[in-house]
Length: 539
Image (cartoon, helix red, strand yellow):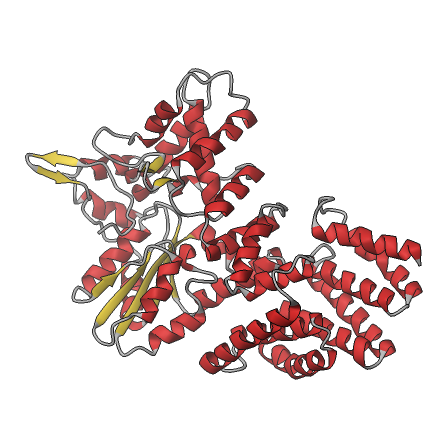
C-alpha cells in the first residue's frame, strides 16, 4: 500500500530492490508516540519533505501493528467509510495531507463525533503541511472572507479536536548523529552532506534539486515547455485541486505559462517530450520527479514545489479548468479560493453545483449574488431540515448548529417571512455571543439580520439605528471591503429605497460605492450597486 511517503533513490543489491531508506528516529518521535497512545486523533504538522509521513507511519506500525489500516483516498470516500464502518475491531484511519479531507463532504466535527460513537476502537493519524496548517490558525480568520470563512471555520474546528505535533524540517545534531550510524546506506550519507542547507528528509526526496531543475528549465535551449507543464500542475494544487490532472487538461493549460514567460519561440520539445522530461526521476534508480503519475488517471505536481515563495497569480484559465472537473464538494472549496483571488466568473458554476448538492453556505452566497439555484422558500425548507438534523446530532449550541440556524433565519428573511426570521434571530443572538463572542463574524451577521427584521416588520426608526450600529461594528472588525460588509451595505440601501426613505439611502450609498470599487464591472455585486445607483437617480 502507498501511504504517501516520498520515494527515495532505489538501491539494487542482487535480486533485491531497496526503495525505502532505513528509518532514522526523529526527535519528535517520543512526543508523537505519546500523543498517539493517549489521543484518538493526532496530526503531525511539518513542511513538505520534512519526513512527517514516514514518522507518522512508523508510529502507527510500532504502536498499533494489530490494527486494520484504513486509508481513504478522497474526501468523498470518508462519508462512505463512516456509514459502513465495522462495529468491532481496532482500526487506524490514515489521512495523509489532512487538508485534502477538510470541508463540506469531508471530515467535520459532526463526522468525528459519529466516529467516536462507534463501538469499534478507532484512532486517526493525519499529516499536514505547515503552509496548509497556517491557513487554519486563529490569526488567519481576518484573511478569510465570505464563503471562505465557512470552510476555514470547519477546518479549524476539526484541527481543534486533534492533538497537534510539530516536526522541524532541519535535522538536529542528535538526529544527524543517529543517521550516521547507518553509514552503509549511500542515500543517507549523501543526504547528510546536504544537511547544512536543507533537511535530510528533503534531500532524500530530492526536493531542493527538483526546484533548481525546474527553475533552470525555463532558459532557452532547455525545457521551457516541460517547465510550463510543471507550473500548470503546481498552480492546480495551489488552487486546491489535489488530484491527478488529466493529460488533456494539462496540455491545454500549459500554453498559458509559455506565453506568460515569453518562451513560446524558444521551445523545441514536443508535448510528449516535455512530459517525459517532467516525469523523469532525479536519479536513474528512482527518487522523485517534478510530475508524478501516468496518463490515466493523470499527473500531479510534487508537493515540495507548491509552497515555493514568490509564485505568481494563478491564471483564470486554471481556475476554470479545475472547477470544471472537480467533484462537487471539492469544487465548492476551490470556488471559495477563487473568490478570495477575485476570480468570480469561474466560481459561480461550482457554487451552483454545490448548492444543488446541499451545501447551504453556497446556496446563500448565490442568493445574495442575485443568482439563486432555487426559490427562497425551497431553500428555507431544505436548510431547516439540515438544521434539525445537526441539532439532533450535536446539540443546539454547537458551532455547526448555530451557523445552520443563522442560515434558516437568512432564508426566512429572503422569503419575506420577517416575523419568523425575527423570532429566530432574537433567540439566536444571545447564544452566539455567549459561545463565540460579540465580535465574531457570525454574531455580526445575526445582529444585522435582526436589525433588518426590526426595520421591516416592527419599527423603522429602531431598525435603522440597529442597522447602522451593526454596520459600524462590521466595518471596524471585518474591514470596509469585506464581502459581508458590502452585502450588508447593499441590504441597507435597498430596504431604505423600498421603504421610500430615499434621503437616508443616499446618505449611506457612498460607503457602499467605495466598498465595491475593487470589484470587476461584471461581478454581480458591482452590477447590483450600479442598479441601486440608477434607482437613486430616478427617485
